[in-house]
Length: 202
Image (cartoon, one colour):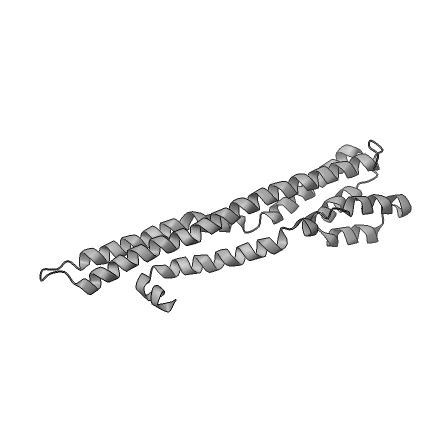
């Protein structure tokens, strides 16, 4: 591995740093963006059942806020349970926007890495080409410098693509996941409002 890094020259270190950050972000988002942690499937039915039995309580609201992002959305609506459906929906939408922002955390960074990695690879390629041309001197070509310049150019191009492709794949995957979770939470929240105000059966 060290031999490859040495052959790729100093520009490869920018790509190595970018790859480490990308792997860390992908691992973190894979752990966080799961349906059971963001929008538990049974949470709505549990909330409705507790509402029928004991009504809204401070302890219930605290537990919901600590449970999951969907729980936070439910808690925001239940704090205004005695208000009109419009007020309840407005409070849910405000919290929903904050929750969605949290779900999108780090995705901009991952997308940026996916976009700039080929450019960093291209930068390494340019550095390699400069070394190739600098090997041309008045006496003749230096085979060692020529070979080093070619290896710098090729390794950086290849590594730039190796970082960019998985980063872009996971970026697109996480964007779609966030959109899916946002829609799911919105539908669940609308059901809660309609059930609480008797506009819909549970």
